[in-house]
Length: 390
Image (cartoon, rainbow, N blue to C red; front, side, top):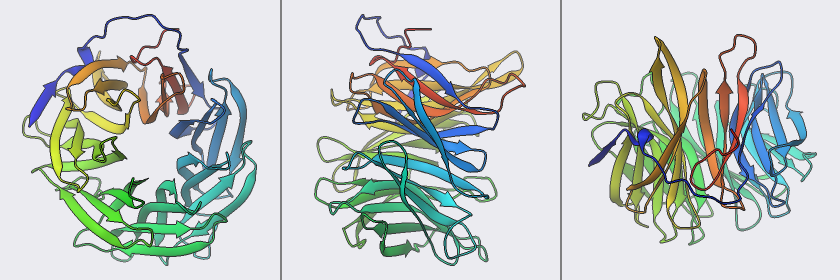
């Protein structure tokens, strides 16, 4: 396995082009966290996250200037984890709620919004246990398929949850996958053959990731499992996301824990390339000798890959968490890498390619100023990872 050390110091030649870049901090007096940012069909930006115990959604223009912001939820705790723009130019948001649903425990929470953030409908779904929705995709029939987890309070077991609803939010089916080990569904994508791939990992046990590996589930439109694959390499993994590549294969981004090439306890950003049957082509890890975390990967229009993550930086007896973004070729070799320092932490949650081929990142930030809490981070870089208007 290839080990690439200190990618953070690699430099990219400066080039001149006309992409706008910016860094925006979004928030008020309450603590906010950002979970996803997407470019919208009108070339604007939608950012979702949490504002204390409410879902908080912000629409901005292409320059990151806020157009509107809205809160959603009830009196208790509600969270949003993923958003997609729908074929009607509205938005579908998935998360969890402690306010709504027929069960008194946590339920999967889905909001259908129009283009200006007005609520068209909201629905809660679940079992007798605690249920969470982490990733959503639109289905061929204009409905939606969701993955997440269900938590059995009596046994502590966490199992993969898959949910299908129609375009009006009516539940079509809900399935719980109880494998020989607990799994949590982290990412679901449609495949080119009309099916779906789910990326799952094992949950933390007492705050520790112990012998955790990744598992892929390929399911059909009815939720039936076509095949599963376990990705295991002698140490533990945490899942970020999965994408289908232009050659009908897949690429996984995540974090590896306990790789013997690191000092004990260190973590790396990890990429796994797979063919269309889920068989591994290559695995590579990237980072420093300290702690590095892989959050999200995309394939760009030039058919290479861009990855975002974060890493620990030590300075003057303090530890900071900085944002890293890098681009790799299809064989995993690095093209360029950039990192952005924080005064406390900058943690990315998502990256997407903007219409102008720039790179749009959503996440969370804390400037450690003792005055404000956490805020949402919205970062627009050029296609080489540069922030030009510092």
